[in-house]
Image 1 (cartoon, one colour):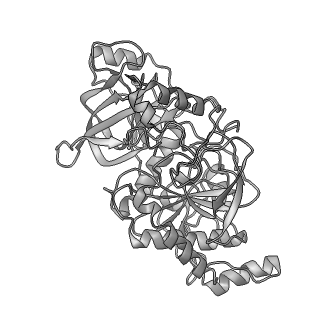
Image 2 (cartoon, rainbow, N blue to C red; image 1 turned 30 degrees about the horizontal axis):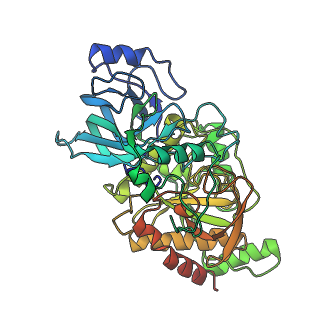
Length: 489
């Protein structure tokens, strides 16, 4: 997901390794790189759930850093299912086209060229937070799910943009941009989008923008991740698995959902609206407007490796808004593969991009199944890294897929409505209402500015981005209405 001006292009990870199949020069360059946490050196053996990390090299005679055309020539690699490109500076924007083609393991056939979404800085922890200043964070494209593959080729070409536009984009990245004017953009009225070309820009000289330095191709294997066979629970109760040999991190990730499901549960069961209201009223001494709790697959249910994430859970005060996203990972997945897609995004966010955990609070697949995202408890106000500048007092929901031109399924839209009706209802929020969030900076608004937003907003309402895609964004009105009805409003 990225700003409208930048070319659309498509972006998670674990222990990285490059293979000794590259030409000698490329292999030497790879082995000279110091291993990054979660990414192993080239000489180490491949294991399921690992990430191969391959440096991009110039594809033209221009060998200087930031060369305008870089890539990885067609080559054999270990098995992987998700791809993305990362670079050193998280504040650097990639203005260009990122294209990849892969070879399917099952058939040996090569795909057509597919574009990755350049993602850039619109998904991230808020500026100045411990997560954003850890020193591990990198810039990245959106991940793309390609299915099990064993061959890859990638090319990155810089785009030519007017000098005036480059200056504006630089100002935005450094936090000095101001929004003025009356143009309506990205679903936000009364602002001119920083970095959006104008008629005057069209007449200005254009030059290729240098590509970010340190670009690497990340090839993610989701690993097995399946929990042990679930033990029968009480009638209509959650399914559970034994945790006797689990790590402290896994126990902690399950324990934060105490009261909703027992330790080791792979699923938090759905509740009727009556039972949901009764549980909430017992705590708050008043009848709430809250939707029935939907069934939610826990992190244990989709096979999260809890040893990857940061050890502590981080919370904000409340949940006043929900930001809807698309994952931009493409639509070529079966619903049975959704846990593998989520494990891959999780690894990419943590080990490739350097975040402390999966960025989204929840994920929804195209069959309408809901999954727990960032650890900390599904009913709690967990601080995510989904909407730059508006992560506090909000939650991020990603619908798995790309919805720029493809309509989301009715099952997915209904699931988002059910999820928001329940979770926003826990905090007294009306899905059809408005609320104010304080900007953390780095987006359309200066740090500290109170911004009026829909309680259910799209990512583009807070940042210059195409996310959650035109087709999914167009369904948010329906989502708000359905969620309000589920709350009994």
